[in-house]
Image 1 (tube, rainbow, N blue to C red):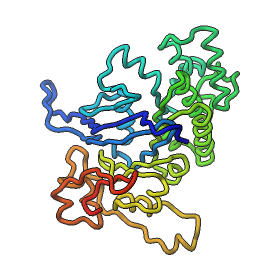
Image 2 (image 1 turned 135 degrees about the vertical axis):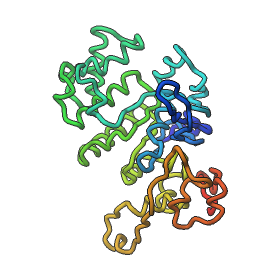
Image 3 (image 1 turned 180 degrees about the horizontal axis):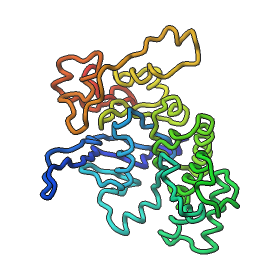
Image 4 (image 1 turned 90 degrees about the vertical axis):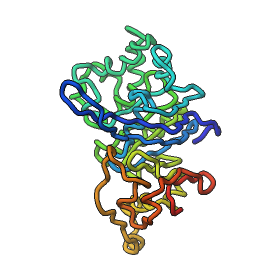
Length: 327
């Protein structure tokens, strides 16, 4: 899957804090919601990096901050040797032709007042790539690429099923021939049978067009199928990052182990021998994360140092990174 060892995307100590204000007329900042709190990782050209974690841990915010939809509080996002954080105006717009996003819900991400041709053709018009007849031909070509009838171009989103709508969203993301696509839970709102079709489509497009994905999802079994490496996120920080086989067979972080214990195995003998790890309590508020390790309030093996020392995200073996004081 990977064409070479060059990192297409480098995220360095990325932080995104949303201010918490108080007051009606004169608003005063009284705190911050630490949605993304100092994460670092690389995505290599031609690969798929899976990003998993519970709801509210900052996965979608990470994707939007990488694309500069949200401007980061601090940190660097290096895409093909260009720092996206430093780009503004027309320079940032030109870079956005190379990075695109597939949103989660196909029922709300497509404008119901626009035809399919206008939806897919809008990026082409915004970036002055194609207009008129040429734009229409490109739209029909993209519909054919994602497995839809080109004659559907004059229809509206409500005339399509959820899977077909997500194919339209994929076509829109491909309109500018990007190199990197953030897939923000593109299958979570779809039926199971349709999920497989969309994942297979994304894999086929990756092989044909040489795309690189950041695949955000909840479903660990689906992430294992499509991803080469997986990053596990919790409360704004990455807990563990390694390749798929290493993560699923030799997970080191207690949070990763708890997540994997909830994934059903289609083997009754193995399944009966497993003991699920039940995490107690709720996820702490990102506006007031715990002192020390973010996971210490729910960790079944936490020790005193876990409540005092924030673990560093360090390499524990070749290609295997972990943020745990006990590993």
